[in-house]
Amino acid sequence: MNVILTGGTGMVGEGVLLECLENAAVTKVLSVSRKPTGRTHAKLTELLVPDFQKLDGVREQLKGYDTCFYCAGISSVGMSEADYTVITYDTPISFAKTLLELNPGMSFIHISGRSTDGTEQGKVMWARIKGRAENALIKLPFKYVVNLRPSLMRPTPGQTRAGTGLKILTAALGWIPALQAITLKQLAHAMINGAKGKATKQVLEVPDIIALANA
Image (cartoon, rainbow, N blue to C red; front, side, top):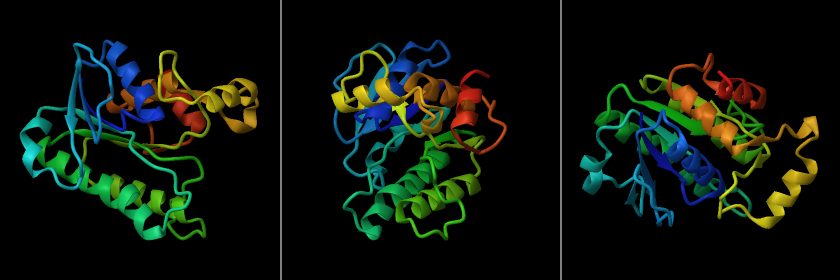
């Protein structure tokens, strides 16, 4: 498959990118981001885009892809609801609509988060907005749409975007079942299998992600 990946300069996106570059199911990867990943690979092409909602100048470079792995995102800490909505809802939905127009029949695999509010009615701001994004993506006529809700994630060996604190935390606490820790390798495998149509539903919690990774 030919993959467009966003968020390759963040911890989650970097882990997914590394797995895509090693996985035989992936033929090429276009990393769409605001800054370079700092990596080179025969499969990898980079497209630097300052604003994901303004793609008129790069439309031709976005053609010819089978799936999008949308890993871009940001913490809601310290953000207003309006600003968080732009990043977490407006931007991915605009990006998805552009990709769908350019690549009919494409799949869209979206990283959401544990405790996302699919009702869009809860009191937690970030959870409502993520739920709104999930619901909007499901309504778009992609071949497959899968929203993954990971929790604690262990970084992949070779990552440069995973801080020491996170590595210590996952090593010390990841075995506790309540935390439902997964590896970024598992997450990437689930995304690849989701793009192959192996997901049985469109919103996946941690146990579902693990099952899809092994499908």
